[in-house]
Image (cartoon, rainbow, N blue to C red; front, side, top):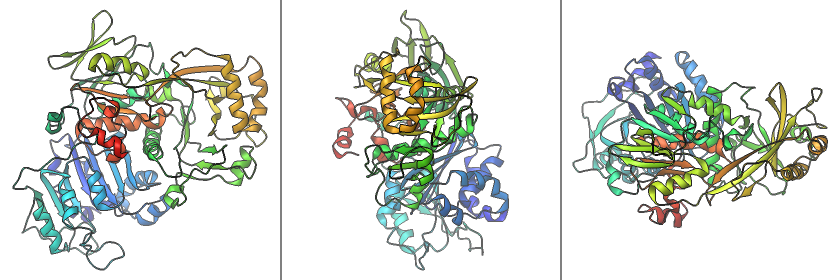
Length: 627
């Protein structure tokens, strides 16, 4: 295996090229069987002078299911431990971007599924090294695919480069492709022409450097700053950052920035983290589904994948979270999956089986779907775990009343004008309270909405056993939800709800909400509702209420504000567990000019300036075109 890896790594100048760098970004035009990524990962692990972060972006033409990936991947024994970790995350690779994290989030693989030219145009980063794979003879073909790699594809590739980006390619690159590469700014190394070694993947017969005779035009970021002068500023060096808010959003942002070297001060008005909506005793993590696979569905899959990765890495399975799967009962009877749902999609969601319907106490004709990639999670446990990462300091009872510009950065002040933090950058992640802070700091109040929600819960009887005549063995959602068996206190509890009251920022309990939660449960799971009727009718039922924050389009609000160094990450609505970790990674990627964890068109839908009257140039175009 050492001999197999050497030609690929040497063609990119690795590991010597990344010495002294904080990050290294590799773009591979084919995922292949994953061996090139595994080789780069292995070299990173073995190098004491490695960069803090390794980004590997690999393109893939077709959707891949877990089963299809198992058939394709065939790593050698030396890479088997790494390949096993990769195999666990290679599921449900539908068209779009898929982020996978390894080594505590320091090795990041982004698999981009779709047509090559379109995928290259969706990239938002400048690669340090590029490997052109499968151009000579793609799978199933005996002749070079010169139509795919035309001048326009090569131009899209050039947009992913900085001056000095190294280019390497497999053997047999057609002359037409070489000429196109030269035309878009690559200088090819004429004497780098290794013969192909039998059986060794990655042998390169082409090497070059991006060094155009002109000043290359940089691609506009997916979420651009308001000040167009900032477009060409280099990514900031990690410094000190204040994150306002210690819920899921704030904790996720803090974790993502800390992994990139930032020293984080998390400021929260409460005396403990996760004291707001993220204090929900237990919540459900599951993808959204829709017949047209809409924006929310695609975003939710990106977010669920990342949250599951964090839960597995940071939480105690069976106590803080449990990957149970989840049944979605479509009480309205309307189908929710696309008509042509590929095998890769079934890694995520499929029609519920007869057994699953029976276990939920539903009739065989009930319309329901089974989400394989789903879990119950205790959000407060995830918040605590994220805030416990190196480089993060949490400060409670620290109510930020104002943000003011300092000589080199920002000051966070309390109501008495005392300085709570002086930092280079601020991220506002304070839920509905973000509205007031943004209004005072920027003069623009985004149209955020407070949404109160109350759940009902109680302890399961000691003799209760999951079954079709009792509570189901897994969570169920649809019109409301039920999480039936969650460790809580000295036993286990059920949680049902939740109410959804717009424009209500009062988190006090309301006895009428128990009745409403029971009515939802009667529609969702009639058998479970009958079983819990006595709990709701007695004083044993308990309540938890919190205030969520949502934007008018029910998508998160993320990105830079009009003020340099001031960012926002809020408005997770009812999907904080699906969206917060994704948004934290997206914000960090935007700050540092990294590969995005989702495609640019989805990222634009989250842009904070989409509701501003004085939006950044081009933002109004995104709104009109629905990008």
